[in-house]
Amino acid sequence: MIPQPIPGESARHTMRKSHWLVTASLVAAISACVTINVYFPAAAAEKAAAEFVDEVIGRAAEEAGATDETPKEAPRRGDLGMLFSPIGVAHAQADLEIESPQVRAIQARMAGRFRTLAPHFASGALGFTRDGHVALRDAAAVPLAARTEVKQQVAEDNRDRDAVYREIAVANGHPEWEAQIRETFAAQWIERAEPGWYYQDAGGAWQRK
Picture 1 (cartoon, rainbow, N blue to C red):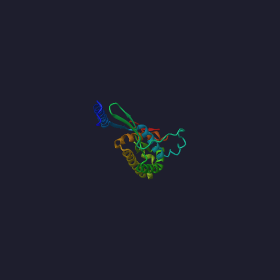
Picture 2 (cartoon, rainbow, N blue to C red):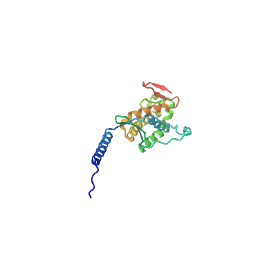
Picture 3 (cartoon, rainbow, N blue to C red):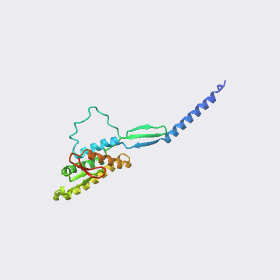
Picture 4 (cartoon, rainbow, N blue to C red):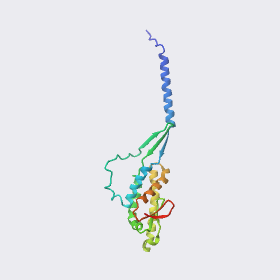
């Protein structure tokens, strides 16, 4: 005996198949339309810049004991915290990675050089500029015999500063962040400077901390 189809079963099967196809199409369409906007991680950049600067100017060892009592889970490389809006845009907050070998090599050079430059910051001969560089603001404060060497070291330090801002942006996959990274570092060089050192304010005028 040949089984007879149940009345209406074929129609229900066709409707279920049609519903599945529509759902799959909608999911595919939504996925294709989602745009991920990755915002510059300002807070992470400020923390990373402060740690980098402390290593260079030698403050890291002094502050090693001043840690938060509550341990925090370290952010994982490449983590993105995402918030989706109803219009198919994913807003992501990225972490900032500064552990690349290139960045660490530059940092080591800067730290070694800073031991020579530090006395000239204390004397007022050198100061931090508003764009994340070092400037010879008072050449007369440097002994004549050391003036040429100090000028050369300042030039080398500024090349390393430009390189590290660029390398951090590239290492994180966002070369367009270079200007924001420079701005963040510039603020931290000034913030972490010792009392009595000079820096440029927003208008470019020299101020003594």
